[in-house]
Image 1 (tube, each protein chain N blue to C red):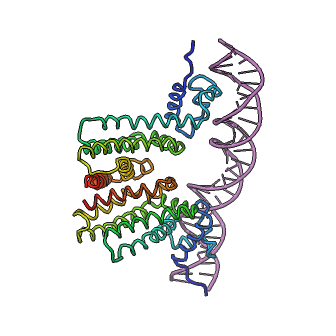
Image 2: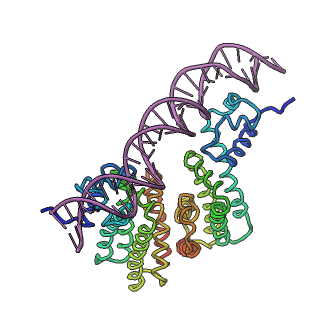
Image 3: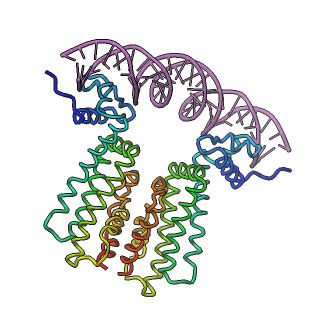
Length: 192
Length: 192
DNA sequence: GGAATGACAAAAATCAATATCTGTCAATCA
DNA sequence: TGATTGACAGATATTGATTTTTGTCATTCC
């Protein structure tokens, strides 16, 4: 007997088809065909094509956040974790944009249509930063302040280096120097 | 006798047509017709349509920078000028995006195709900030540092609030609070 | 009886035929 | 003689007829 069709299986298929054909040429019929079922069946598990896209986007964005969680938990000073966290985030995105541009293009297109999923992801990233900053304040590395506010501020101040909208500017040869300058400025603000 | 045709007149016409029809539906023929000349004549004064677009973009961006120059020259402490400069820049852009969305759309489309003109504009903005920061360092308001590097850093750290790519995020109700948080962080970094 | 199908209507995407636009240049004009 | 014109070729954009897609639901299947 055939496996029961699950949301997970549909998402895996959707991700596969999106990778292969890109977001513009991916239809629900394609996703269903890759699973050997009719497209009507897919609609039993997902409300709409948009819901499938949202779910795929969420999976992908979670894969970005996951390694950052490890950085937060490392037994190191908050300052080091802050730097590492920002470097991992920016390099992850920039690497993907360079090494797999179509993939990055696809991810960007998905994020444009899944605004709410992206907002939750951004909140999650800011919250991760807040935890590092709270640690840093607790043990005196950073000056007192509201970690939630400071976390958001740090994330936004570094947007140029990780926000996909800026991807077109990532081939600038001065990028690394610019990052260092912004990071140094932000760090001084946290310590001050 | 008719006025001699000048580059200025062509640019004024181009700006006019762009305002009225938007960048997608603006042809060199339209620009020429608005001046009562043939399009061949326009090509005597500009190398290409791209050159016309670049020149219009430059005019518009210069109109953004000009009022900021006044802020720099005001006889006030550097800290106050820095804040004012950032507020004027962000509010100018955000106002335009809200009050004249098609106009903003047009300007955005132009900037996407006039990369070099935009790069020069960004350099100019960073240089303006550097001047304020140099003043602040000179009279002890800010800690010592390289004004050129710090100017670029401040501009990039606040990109979220003035970079047109982020316009879609400017309706966020927390925008003002986010700006205040980033500004406070950056200011502490400059003073520290 | 719950899961899957496929015919269907409305909406969206595709495609090829048609029209417009860009940029050049020999001819015209003043 | 130097500015302007308009015909022209190749590239790009528009249009509307045709196909594909989305989402629904009565019917079929196990």
